[in-house]
Length: 112
Image (cartoon, rainbow, N blue to C red; front, side, top):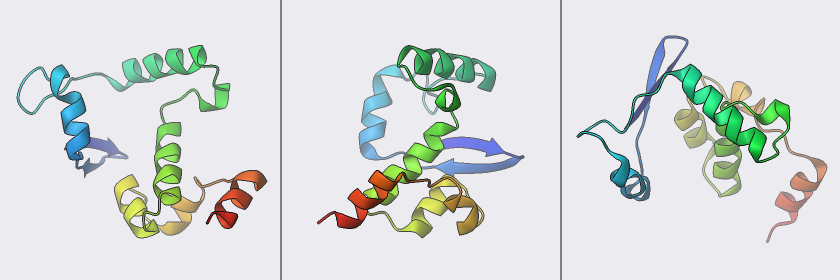
């Protein structure tokens, strides 16, 4: 389980078996993978994103939430499941994160 909180509202995200297997070598103690302050994570993410050539607008870890939502929906996940997993209170708040370019929209609509 991953615990996170936004606006003093904790939520939990269950890990898949594949994710559990991938993180196993990094575990420090039962139930704890690592502890990192959000500012440390932000700085680390920003540094890596910059090295990867991401535009400045995508150099914050919040873009991971957008990416996960889009990948899940593009993969066929029900929108209600994506809403719950991402912690969005309403579908309208989720929809603000799902911006598609004309090319992306056409590719998804014409996908067979």
